[in-house]
Length: 316
Ligand code: GLU
Image 1 (cartoon, rainbow, N blue to C red):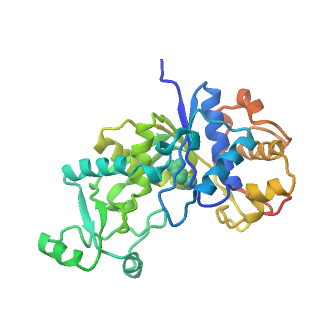
Image 2 (image 1 turned 30 degrees about the horizontal axis):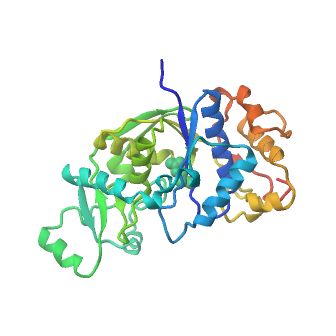
Image 3 (image 1 turned 180 degrees about the horizontal axis):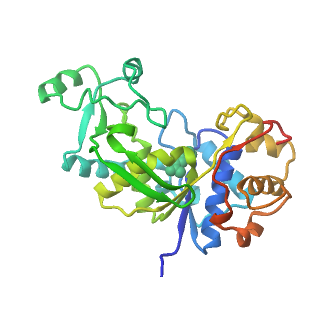
């Protein structure tokens, strides 16, 4: 028998939740609940310059209003479910990778990398050309006098492939498509790639449902899991909601954040119905409660391709 599903909501509390976040949470919730599984809420507030505790609390309120509940985590779960309070977990994973000889300090600034015209990975970060990979300890000491380094991990020249539950087979060359990547920024903030791997394992998460934009991060995460002796969750990368101009729906579409929709008197059932129709679970966008969708849910019915909205006004 397979293990009970443990899914998760992993929002970044850097503003009000928008429809794209609600879409990911709805599908993560339906996938876990339809299998009789549980949901963990982890607040991904690693970046102190962008994330606020007030946004985290607002997110929890918006999730409840949508009818999406969780079994562990969030503010009721204490500091353990806020990434900003979990640094020692990331530090020990980093120490393990250091012990394996995989890390090196990197003194390159982001501007210098962009200016060097390095090719970019699918997520928009420059593929690191390896400038600081082979510095001598003398060179490292000299550079450290004027600049605090980021910490990068040295990736091998291998291809990684995995089977995504929705998108099918995906493969990537770590060295060519991604390059050595950052695990701790020069300001001391741990990188998403490290934190997500450590947290999913420590929180017992075995099913990850998230936007298709993170598909190309998955080989890096699978590789880190192997280095750290952690299990691989099952992955489902879902379509993105796009604004009418084809860009990914984001916090800038203020009219479609939950604050604007709630203030305009839109009912949560209308939003859930619309999201379920976009997902392919309903033929028409009729109002429905999240829990009424549980018996209808199956990954076979969920569309794979991105959804382009016709307007980003309240008529959504
Ligand atoms: N915190 C990320 C976001 O809000 C999600 C990361 C993940 O699901 O792995 O986009």
